[in-house]
Image (cartoon, rainbow, N blue to C red; front, side, top):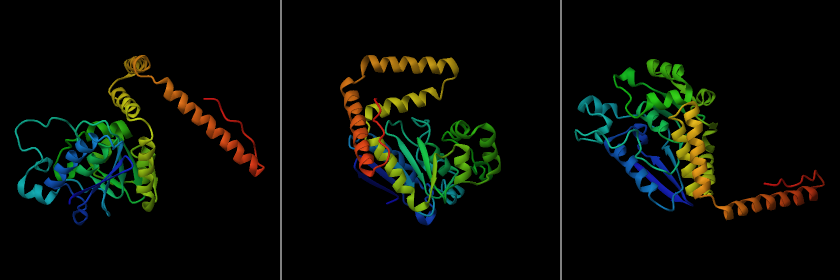
Length: 274
């Protein structure tokens, strides 16, 4: 199978599985990814998705051998004359997608990574936009998303040079959130996904939607919209019972910490009120 999907404890792991082709996007793989995202997003037992590639690459982009012989774009995923019903590599979804970038993410593969909510990178990760070098143009939002993350000048430099950026520089630039040793990549990404899964999905969805909406607004309009959404949430969906439960959990953890540290003969901090 070109795409492996494994669901455990409310976390789905999607693995691009064409390692012999560095996980290049064949028609089958390009079709399987959005289908899997849509199916997982609809499942009540999935609260977060981790996407990675079978080593040694994350995704080498579209299959250039096929493009050279057929001239088709988007790996023939949409053969009709109508424009696609959505932009980007994934259909509309509310479930967060964490990109676990285990190796090179190039051109279409780079766009695939940029479609994720955020990225955790292996020390072996490298990023490059080689669209111009191979005579193609980005079509999955790279020229929008990349400048948002690293700034217009750095984004333009990547696109007009095709230069590879390693994980450390990508982290310094704000493209990825963390860089970890290769063997720790999936455990770290899955741990983050489980933290997301511990929070009620409706809360995660609301916060995620706010971030995405605010990214499209500027200045006072963004502040006003955030205030409006926050007020609407408090008026219509705020759960006092859950807040009391969370607060009690914080207090209980503080008491446990006090007991443990006192037994060690070390400091005796007091639990903070929440």
